[in-house]
Amino acid sequence: MAKFIYSKLANAQAYHTFQKGGDKNALSRKEKTVIIAGGAGLMNKRNMTPHGVCTEVSDETFKVLETVPSFVKHLEGKFLSVHDKEVTAKNEEKEAANLNEDKSAPLTPAKLKAEGKKTAV
Image (cartoon, rainbow, N blue to C red; front, side, top):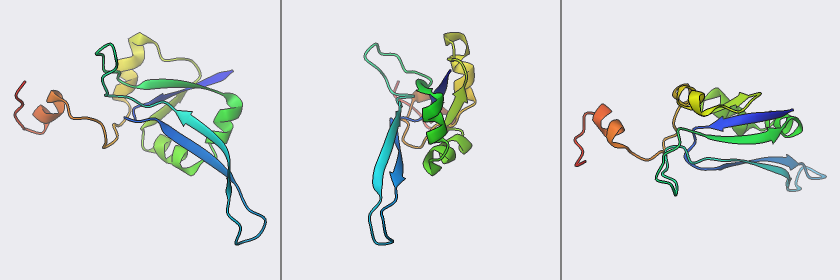
């Protein structure tokens, strides 16, 4: 059974696990990399702005992700959420409302208006 990771990050995120070197002075080696898609709030080729992006991962891969500190921080910060089934188009906007945007998300007229700033559009 797969897990679906819903992301509100503006950019894709690569999470790495490392294998420690033989002695204390040895460098760690990258063991595994998992990439979670980003692109929330960015216009795509169809001029649509997705509320969030979904990446499907296997249960085995998800167990690896749970050991990566930066992945855990993103979950705790509500930039990511994990589901046992894919978020449907009906529920996409509701799910996106439960997640936080990262600071690199682009400005929109709605955000500027919320900050009390005027827009030309």
